[in-house]
Length: 121
Image (cartoon, rainbow, N blue to C red; front, top):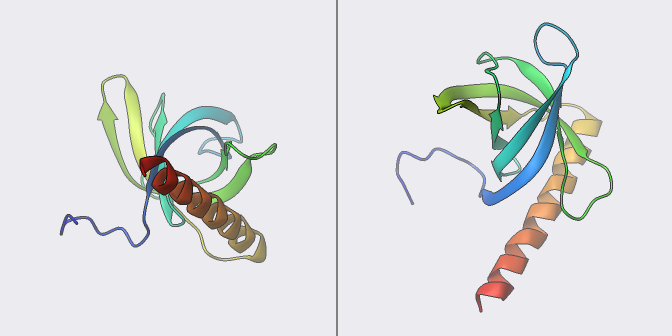
């Protein structure tokens, strides 16, 4: 494990479609792509930056669900990669709805980890 990696949760590298709602300067929706995901946060690509500290609702389109999982997230880092803006978001932990969303995300991630283990053997 990389000693500089301060993540508290195991991440699954999985590309998912996402939408961000309630971004700064309005409530417009923006398309995004998830690079990796954990119960604590995600790495997301956008066509434009969000400021560090900005809060947004993120809707993830999980592969086994008919509706997106929606969670409140805060931007903790951001950088430019070519024409895309890549940012790390940390999920909020307050509120019953948020805890339920993160619990559902945890179940999904555990199922994906098990699938990867089985397919590797």
